[in-house]
Structures are given as C-alpha cells and as structure tokens.
Image: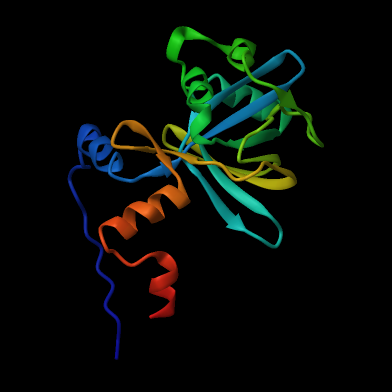
Length: 194
C-alpha cells in the first residue's frame, strides 16, 4: 500500500490565550531550575522537565530565552533540576518571581549544596539533579536544553508538588490510594493484578 503525503497549509495559529488555557489542563511536576556559581546565581520555577534517556542519563528542560536564567545557563553550561515536594511551595513561589525577589535573593530561606558542576542544589528536594548542558535547540521564545546528569541527590519520599489548572496541587501516593479505596475505584496494584 502506498502512503500519501499531503502538505497542508494553515493561515493562522491557535491564539496564545487558547493555547495557554489548554496547557493548564496538563498537570506537571514542579521543579526549580538553578544556574550560576557563587553569588552569580538565579533560577526559575518550571513544569517543563522531562527525562530523555537513562543510558546515558539525560533530561530536557524548556527555558524562556528572556528569563534571567538564560544568560547564566549559557555562561556556565550547567544547571540544577530540583524536584519539589508539596512542603516546598514557598520555594516554588520565590523562584516564580512572586514577591519580586531576583537573582541570589531567591535562594534565601532554604539550604543549598553543590556537586560536580557547582550549581546550587536544594537540600531536601525530592530529587536534585546536577546537569551539564549537552545541547541547546533554540525555537521561538524558548530553548530546549538537553542536560547530561552528572550527579543525583534524593531525599526520603514526601508528597509531590504539581501544578494544575493554575494552582499548586499536592500528590500523596498513600493518601490518594486511601481516597480511591473510599470510592471503590481499583488501586494501581489491583489494576496490575487484573
């Protein structure tokens, strides 16, 4: 059977507001991306982190090229991915710019460590990944940054922090399983046994 390739031309894109509204329907894990070294540091809150490969360990993050993090990411070629717990909403808000804090001031109120690349990693994050920039793909307003993971620090399991429909939402596996049991929905284990 022959496949048919059609070139279709559209005369417009979806509106930015419609796209933004649609993307609010996608729940995402909340992370803080940290960049820089010493006192020359900043960071931002994102939901755009994704695993790329386990061998070698690499991930992808989307970075707005107008952000204060972009020049430091380019200068130092490294970044941290700090996956936040539900108890770290204050960190997420500081790094999102709430309260007007910028640069190194965003790091106050939390403990930070460094590993191989020298970028700050959040003590007590669900996981903190120390990454070296492997490749950058610039598209439109953002850059897709591929990072080689050089070190990983994990904490005891806590409730995860997600962002959905314009709000921070806590996900607690044990608590959510109890809620499912209360409404007689099969738990993930029961689904695997079917």
